[in-house]
Image (tube, rainbow, N blue to C red):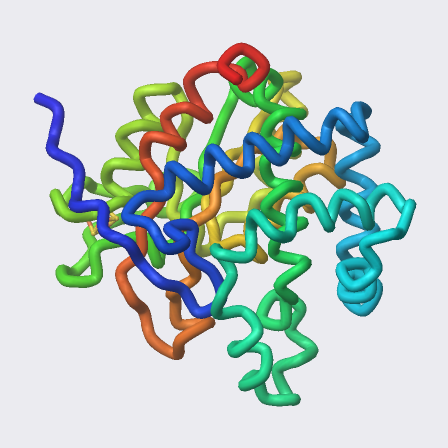
Amino acid sequence: MKQIRPEYSPVHGKTYSLFGNTYSTSEYYETIRMLADKTQVLYPDISAFIKSIRRFSSKKRILKKSLRNTESENLMSVILNIIDPYLRKYTVNTEEHLRRLPVSKLWDRRLATSREQYHLYMLEVELTNRLFSSEFITADKKIALMPYCLQDFSIKCKSARKGFDYQCRHCSAGCFQNYASEILEANNIEPFIWIEGDMKKLAKYTLKEKRTFGILGIACIPELMWGMRNCRKNNIPVVGIPLNANRCVRWFGEFFPNSVDLKELERLVTVPIADNT
Ligand code: SF4
């Protein structure tokens, strides 16, 4: 019997929330798809587009200047000026967080992610999903890496080590990890709560057996971007879905309940993106 999914209420993050000022994350996903469509017209080679975002997004000062210079003919600057006004409602807390971030923590690139970088990462995640969707769905072996901050903190989590890493034991009807794991298992993707598994070892072992290998990541936007870029660098087809907000101990010093859009997760793992846009 299908379980009733946990209540899906807006959550606010330290720097971002995909709810924006609404009660659902649907608007965010519609917006990011619209922006990807619009910008892909300007930059049709998706692989080259992703590489350009990666390079451009590393230059924080230039990003700020690009927003001030709306007359620029530089393509990446034009693209940033297209996406920025639509995505600002999802990153309202970023500047306040950066103002309060102690100098000693500025070296941490994830914690020090700027508002413009968030917007480019959002676009890059969507484009990377488009690039690898079919390859991921048809891979022989697929795993999903989920963060432990998605579990139900009101009870003692019963997840246990199995194979590559920890797996959910479905102990709570109020746990997003539980439902995400169910969706993934139903689509032949092994779900893991990523705590100590060695991804490189697993990829090497799978590829040695001449089987194709794909990874799905769930994490807050800066972590997800880091992981997806790492997979791309190692030629692993990767897709990803951001947590609805960043609310873990790393950002707040303690854990707060979090969620992920389960409908979007289902969409991502069921039909290749080229077939469902
Ligand atoms: S449902 Fe799974 S992830 Fe959630 S608390 Fe239980 S064992 Fe842990």
